[in-house]
Image (tube, rainbow, N blue to C red):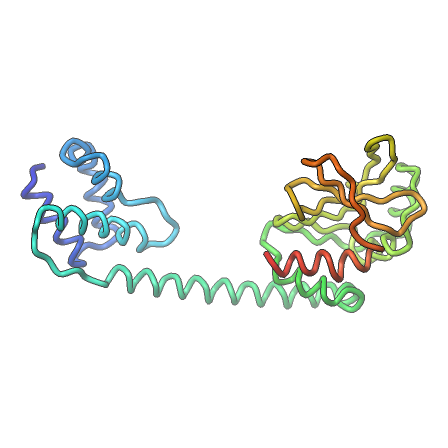
Amino acid sequence: MNSEVLAIKLLDLAEGRETPESWRSWWDEHEPELENLLSRGEFLKLKPCRHDFRWVPVLTSQKGAIAILEKSGTAFEVSNLYQERYLAELDAFCKEQERVQRKKQKEFKANNPELFCRYPKFSKALAKALEPSDEIQPAATEEQIASQESVLDFTLPAQVREFFLLTAGIQVSTGVILSLSGMFDLTIHGERYCVLGEFWKEADGDQLLLRPGEETIWYYAHEQDKVKRLCNDMTELLEKKLARYLNEQ
Protein backbone atom coordinates (compact mmCIF):
# COMPACT_ATOMS: atom_id res chain seq x y z
CA MET A 1 0.00 0.00 0.00
CA ASN A 2 1.36 3.43 -0.97
CA SER A 3 -0.01 6.95 -1.36
CA GLU A 4 -0.73 6.51 -5.08
CA VAL A 5 -2.82 3.37 -4.57
CA LEU A 6 -4.67 5.03 -1.69
CA ALA A 7 -5.39 8.14 -3.77
CA ILE A 8 -7.00 6.03 -6.51
CA LYS A 9 -9.20 4.30 -3.94
CA LEU A 10 -10.16 7.60 -2.33
CA LEU A 11 -11.18 8.95 -5.73
CA ASP A 12 -13.33 5.87 -6.33
CA LEU A 13 -14.98 6.48 -2.98
CA ALA A 14 -15.47 10.23 -3.40
CA GLU A 15 -16.85 9.85 -6.92
CA GLY A 16 -19.24 7.02 -6.05
CA ARG A 17 -17.65 4.02 -7.73
CA GLU A 18 -17.53 1.87 -4.60
CA THR A 19 -20.32 -0.27 -3.20
CA PRO A 20 -20.79 -0.75 0.55
CA GLU A 21 -19.52 -4.30 0.18
CA SER A 22 -16.48 -3.54 -1.96
CA TRP A 23 -15.43 -0.70 0.32
CA ARG A 24 -15.82 -2.75 3.49
CA SER A 25 -13.89 -5.65 1.96
CA TRP A 26 -11.02 -3.42 0.82
CA TRP A 27 -10.87 -1.69 4.17
CA ASP A 28 -10.78 -4.95 6.13
CA GLU A 29 -7.97 -6.20 3.91
CA HIS A 30 -5.82 -3.07 4.22
CA GLU A 31 -6.74 -1.63 7.62
CA PRO A 32 -3.31 -2.17 9.28
CA GLU A 33 -1.53 -0.50 6.35
CA LEU A 34 -3.96 2.41 6.35
CA GLU A 35 -3.43 2.98 10.05
CA ASN A 36 0.29 3.42 9.40
CA LEU A 37 -0.17 5.52 6.27
CA LEU A 38 -2.78 7.99 7.55
CA SER A 39 -2.86 10.32 10.52
CA ARG A 40 -5.02 9.16 13.40
CA GLY A 41 -7.74 11.67 12.56
CA GLU A 42 -7.77 10.75 8.86
CA PHE A 43 -7.84 7.05 9.69
CA LEU A 44 -10.83 7.39 12.02
CA LYS A 45 -12.79 9.57 9.57
CA LEU A 46 -12.17 7.14 6.72
CA LYS A 47 -12.91 3.99 8.72
CA PRO A 48 -16.35 2.56 7.84
CA CYS A 49 -18.63 2.50 10.86
CA ARG A 50 -20.82 -0.39 11.93
CA HIS A 51 -24.43 0.39 11.15
CA ASP A 52 -27.71 -1.40 10.47
CA PHE A 53 -28.25 0.70 7.34
CA ARG A 54 -26.32 -0.59 4.34
CA TRP A 55 -25.27 2.80 2.93
CA VAL A 56 -24.27 4.67 6.09
CA PRO A 57 -20.72 3.22 6.42
CA VAL A 58 -19.72 4.06 2.85
CA LEU A 59 -21.36 7.50 3.13
CA THR A 60 -19.41 8.42 6.26
CA SER A 61 -16.19 7.07 4.75
CA GLN A 62 -16.81 9.16 1.64
CA LYS A 63 -16.74 12.28 3.80
CA GLY A 64 -13.39 11.19 5.18
CA ALA A 65 -12.07 10.56 1.67
CA ILE A 66 -13.21 14.00 0.52
CA ALA A 67 -11.36 15.66 3.41
CA ILE A 68 -8.13 13.81 2.59
CA LEU A 69 -8.37 14.59 -1.14
CA GLU A 70 -9.10 18.26 -0.52
CA LYS A 71 -6.12 18.51 1.81
CA SER A 72 -3.86 17.01 -0.85
CA GLY A 73 -5.20 19.34 -3.56
CA THR A 74 -6.48 16.47 -5.71
CA ALA A 75 -9.22 17.36 -8.19
CA PHE A 76 -12.40 15.28 -8.06
CA GLU A 77 -16.18 15.45 -8.50
CA VAL A 78 -18.23 14.45 -5.50
CA SER A 79 -20.94 11.88 -6.18
CA ASN A 80 -24.30 12.15 -4.38
CA LEU A 81 -25.00 8.46 -4.96
CA TYR A 82 -24.35 7.33 -1.39
CA GLN A 83 -26.40 10.16 0.09
CA GLU A 84 -29.30 9.38 -2.25
CA ARG A 85 -29.15 5.65 -1.49
CA TYR A 86 -29.01 6.36 2.23
CA LEU A 87 -32.03 8.67 2.06
CA ALA A 88 -33.96 6.06 0.08
CA GLU A 89 -33.02 3.43 2.65
CA LEU A 90 -34.04 5.73 5.49
CA ASP A 91 -37.35 6.49 3.81
CA ALA A 92 -38.08 2.78 3.35
CA PHE A 93 -37.16 2.13 6.97
CA CYS A 94 -39.46 4.90 8.23
CA LYS A 95 -42.34 3.65 6.10
CA GLU A 96 -41.86 0.13 7.42
CA GLN A 97 -41.77 1.43 10.99
CA GLU A 98 -44.99 3.32 10.36
CA ARG A 99 -46.58 0.18 8.92
CA VAL A 100 -45.52 -1.88 11.93
CA GLN A 101 -46.72 0.88 14.26
CA ARG A 102 -50.14 1.03 12.60
CA LYS A 103 -50.44 -2.74 12.77
CA LYS A 104 -49.43 -2.75 16.42
CA GLN A 105 -51.90 0.00 17.26
CA LYS A 106 -54.67 -1.85 15.44
CA GLU A 107 -53.89 -5.10 17.26
CA PHE A 108 -53.62 -3.34 20.61
CA LYS A 109 -56.98 -1.64 20.16
CA ALA A 110 -58.61 -4.85 18.94
CA ASN A 111 -57.25 -6.81 21.89
CA ASN A 112 -58.08 -4.17 24.51
CA PRO A 113 -61.45 -2.60 23.62
CA GLU A 114 -62.47 -2.10 27.25
CA LEU A 115 -59.20 -0.34 28.06
CA PHE A 116 -59.74 2.03 25.12
CA CYS A 117 -63.32 2.64 26.17
CA ARG A 118 -62.46 3.40 29.81
CA TYR A 119 -59.19 5.29 29.26
CA PRO A 120 -59.24 6.60 25.65
CA LYS A 121 -56.49 9.24 25.95
CA PHE A 122 -54.13 6.95 27.81
CA SER A 123 -54.78 4.00 25.51
CA LYS A 124 -54.23 6.04 22.36
CA ALA A 125 -50.96 7.45 23.72
CA LEU A 126 -49.88 3.99 24.87
CA ALA A 127 -50.53 2.47 21.45
CA LYS A 128 -48.30 5.12 19.84
CA ALA A 129 -45.48 4.61 22.33
CA LEU A 130 -45.39 0.80 22.43
CA GLU A 131 -42.11 -0.87 21.50
CA PRO A 132 -41.79 -4.57 20.58
CA SER A 133 -40.33 -5.35 24.02
CA ASP A 134 -43.13 -3.59 25.91
CA GLU A 135 -45.76 -5.66 27.68
CA ILE A 136 -49.52 -5.39 28.14
CA GLN A 137 -50.80 -8.12 30.43
CA PRO A 138 -54.28 -9.67 30.28
CA ALA A 139 -56.89 -8.58 32.79
CA ALA A 140 -56.46 -9.66 36.39
CA THR A 141 -59.22 -11.61 38.11
CA GLU A 142 -60.98 -10.59 41.30
CA GLU A 143 -59.25 -13.54 42.97
CA GLN A 144 -55.79 -12.36 41.89
CA ILE A 145 -56.47 -8.86 43.16
CA ALA A 146 -57.80 -10.17 46.47
CA SER A 147 -54.76 -12.41 46.84
CA GLN A 148 -52.36 -9.52 46.30
CA GLU A 149 -54.30 -7.36 48.75
CA SER A 150 -53.98 -10.14 51.30
CA VAL A 151 -50.24 -10.47 50.74
CA LEU A 152 -49.76 -6.71 51.03
CA ASP A 153 -52.32 -6.26 53.82
CA PHE A 154 -53.50 -3.30 51.75
CA THR A 155 -56.89 -2.56 50.19
CA LEU A 156 -56.53 -1.14 46.70
CA PRO A 157 -58.43 2.05 45.88
CA ALA A 158 -61.53 1.43 43.77
CA GLN A 159 -60.09 3.05 40.64
CA VAL A 160 -56.83 1.09 40.89
CA ARG A 161 -58.83 -2.11 41.24
CA GLU A 162 -60.88 -1.11 38.19
CA PHE A 163 -57.69 -0.64 36.16
CA PHE A 164 -56.27 -4.03 37.10
CA LEU A 165 -59.55 -5.69 36.11
CA LEU A 166 -58.75 -4.45 32.58
CA THR A 167 -55.04 -5.31 32.61
CA ALA A 168 -52.88 -6.89 35.29
CA GLY A 169 -50.08 -4.58 34.26
CA ILE A 170 -48.23 -2.62 31.62
CA GLN A 171 -44.53 -2.10 31.11
CA VAL A 172 -43.38 0.61 28.72
CA SER A 173 -39.64 0.96 28.15
CA THR A 174 -39.83 4.76 28.09
CA GLY A 175 -40.67 4.80 31.78
CA VAL A 176 -44.15 3.62 32.76
CA ILE A 177 -44.68 0.45 34.80
CA LEU A 178 -47.94 -0.50 36.49
CA SER A 179 -48.06 -4.04 37.83
CA LEU A 180 -50.40 -5.83 40.19
CA SER A 181 -47.93 -8.62 40.92
CA GLY A 182 -45.06 -6.15 41.28
CA MET A 183 -46.65 -4.09 44.06
CA PHE A 184 -44.87 -3.96 47.41
CA ASP A 185 -44.79 -2.10 50.72
CA LEU A 186 -42.40 0.80 51.18
CA THR A 187 -41.81 3.03 54.18
CA ILE A 188 -40.51 6.53 53.42
CA HIS A 189 -39.74 8.98 56.21
CA GLY A 190 -41.82 6.88 58.60
CA GLU A 191 -44.89 6.83 56.33
CA ARG A 192 -46.25 3.58 54.91
CA TYR A 193 -46.92 3.41 51.17
CA CYS A 194 -47.76 0.73 48.63
CA VAL A 195 -45.75 0.98 45.42
CA LEU A 196 -48.08 0.93 42.41
CA GLY A 197 -45.30 1.05 39.83
CA GLU A 198 -42.79 3.38 38.22
CA PHE A 199 -43.12 6.67 36.36
CA TRP A 200 -39.90 8.23 35.09
CA LYS A 201 -41.29 11.75 35.08
CA GLU A 202 -38.23 13.29 36.71
CA ALA A 203 -35.73 10.43 36.83
CA ASP A 204 -35.44 6.75 35.95
CA GLY A 205 -36.84 4.56 38.71
CA ASP A 206 -39.12 7.16 40.33
CA GLN A 207 -42.14 5.46 41.86
CA LEU A 208 -45.92 5.79 41.99
CA LEU A 209 -47.26 5.37 45.51
CA LEU A 210 -50.56 4.72 47.26
CA ARG A 211 -51.47 5.42 50.87
CA PRO A 212 -54.01 3.40 52.85
CA GLY A 213 -57.58 4.62 52.50
CA GLU A 214 -56.85 7.13 49.70
CA GLU A 215 -57.46 7.34 45.96
CA THR A 216 -54.64 9.92 45.71
CA ILE A 217 -51.56 8.95 43.70
CA TRP A 218 -48.23 10.04 45.17
CA TYR A 219 -44.87 10.37 43.43
CA TYR A 220 -41.52 9.46 44.98
CA ALA A 221 -38.63 11.39 43.42
CA HIS A 222 -35.82 9.18 44.63
CA GLU A 223 -32.96 11.53 43.72
CA GLN A 224 -34.53 14.20 45.92
CA ASP A 225 -35.75 11.62 48.46
CA LYS A 226 -39.07 13.44 48.39
CA VAL A 227 -42.70 12.30 48.16
CA LYS A 228 -44.97 14.60 46.16
CA ARG A 229 -48.71 14.58 45.56
CA LEU A 230 -49.14 13.73 41.87
CA CYS A 231 -52.88 13.58 41.19
CA ASN A 232 -56.30 12.89 42.69
CA ASP A 233 -56.85 9.34 41.50
CA MET A 234 -56.02 6.59 39.02
CA THR A 235 -58.15 8.04 36.23
CA GLU A 236 -56.35 11.36 36.40
CA LEU A 237 -53.01 9.55 36.46
CA LEU A 238 -53.83 7.62 33.30
CA GLU A 239 -55.84 10.13 31.29
CA LYS A 240 -53.76 13.21 32.08
CA LYS A 241 -50.32 12.52 33.55
CA LEU A 242 -49.35 9.32 31.74
CA ALA A 243 -51.16 10.16 28.49
CA ARG A 244 -49.28 13.46 28.26
CA TYR A 245 -45.97 11.82 29.15
CA LEU A 246 -46.34 9.05 26.56
CA ASN A 247 -47.36 11.53 23.85
CA GLU A 248 -44.12 13.43 24.48
CA GLN A 249 -41.89 10.38 24.05
